[in-house]
Image (cartoon, rainbow, N blue to C red; front, top):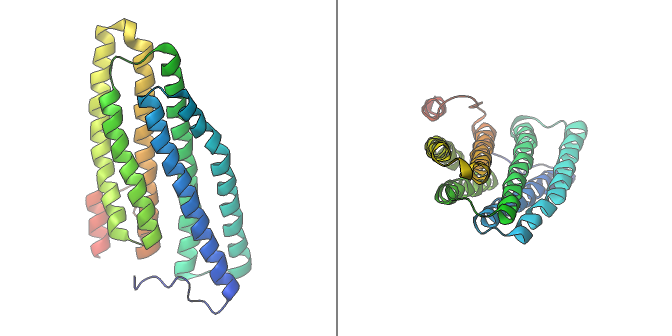
Length: 237
């Protein structure tokens, strides 16, 4: 990517600091991505042990968040980065926050899985969970890949997929609320599915946020809070 000049500094220590930040971000992303996958499996298969594994990973994710924040603060204080380096640090700090929140949402799904394992499976909603879950898992994978490769086009595709997730989420909500009204005995278990779908929708939002930071990093343009069409138009200017 000709806009980025990462890793071309005369200071070896500066290069190593930036490389460490990127590597730790990717490690954190890998952990969070695994949390999402395992949380989905725990919910779909009522696997309490796997759900607990997701919850146990939270501590590792939190420690990486603090480590990366510390590294970014040190670079800002000692190196006073400019241009693309400054954008990298800003994008990383925001992406780390979104990754930590994705981990929190995964933990919510895992807890719903534990409850369903104890109370009995929900009569409805697993198809929607699987379908939307696959969507957001792919979004997270793609947005992390976009960050690793400084790929603004792939980041934009993540934003477009988030719109599809939102549409599917609203459709699933209508269906499940209707089902609960028709069968009040199912309310408690179906609510666990609803909260899980809400968590998945939020994971999609956070994946999109990370993609928007990739676009900011690569193009130097703030594309938050606007539509995909508006992002495309802004990138053409």
